[in-house]
Length: 386
Ligand SMILES: Nc1ncnc2c1ncn2[C@@H]1O[C@H](COP(=O)(O)OP(=O)(O)O)[C@@H](O)[C@H]1O
Ligand SMILES: [Mg+2]
Image 1 (spheres, rainbow, N blue to C red):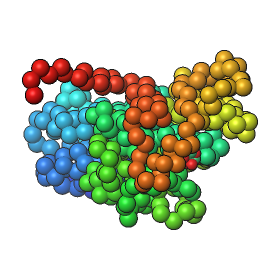
Image 2: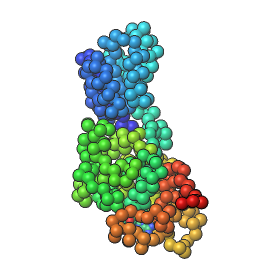
Image 3: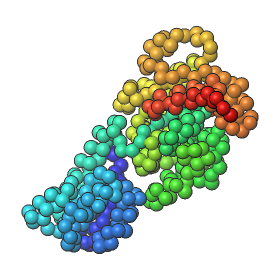
Image 4: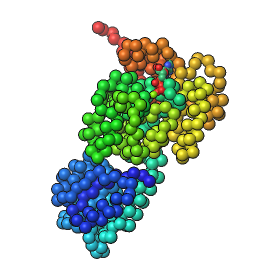
């Protein structure tokens, strides 16, 4: 079930207890708890920062016109489901609430009615999950078998998108061997694990404290410094973090490490397009085929998988057509093999030169993935004087 996040604004003790009783057996996370309905400014401020999917608001003591309350909540967080809770089932109160724009009006006993309403919303969000999420695009990068170049590519694609004025998040979810920080020269004491371990305080200001931004327009959240991290975040926590951050960026790029790990699989629900980076080596192609099949079997649409063929030699032993037939997918992009260029890049402790052949390929891939306009090279002005 989709892991909805909830905001509770409940003053009435009976309603509060019934809501807690109902939620205790459900997989939804309460991220805002507010008990003083009169303190609307504080409530709206917390809702705006945490952006829950559903707001349960106790209207039993609300004296003002309800429209004011619902429109302020929508102004703060876009399009949440608003459930009005009341102690009475009077027809007039129900009608008034519906007219004010609440999605549901519930009254005690809440146990079943609230559970059904939340399950309906969760099912709706899961259906919407196929490509129509709020916020920017999320792209997940996998390395078919490790060493194929996924991390090299994601870092350079992120830098290019930043240069094209996209607001980018580059998140390293390769908890075993994350290299994003090394390639981008990011130094941070925090990592994405801090987000997983502090979900109860994950709001935008906490998130901003975790990210670093050494590359213009690109915010980077690293994997933990210690390799072979023992901690495995829960599937729903992975989805929660990606779902929370994505509305804050035009493009969220996630390094999902090698092959198709359990965590990568968990993240897929929040990933709009999967970029599978492979080389022409036989083991990498074998692994690519397996990954593609697993993704398709899990219901991930073929049109959402981007096949990136890296380190392609000048002369191919196999034609692109044969390769596409073998993998059952079109090749989205081919990037040449250029060991000397990368060797020099890393030896000098910088990122790829944009004018190098490899750099130009990274730009083209970034433009194609994010569907943005490539900037036109400025024509040299002919100067008559001076
Ligand atoms: N197009 C390329 N040409 C030459 N070497 C490459 C290319 N892309 C990546 N590499 C090199 O391959 C190695 C593995 O790259 P990396 O990005 O860490 O792979 P992955 O993330 O898939 O495990 C690195 O040494 C990197 O410099
Ligand atoms: Mg990698």
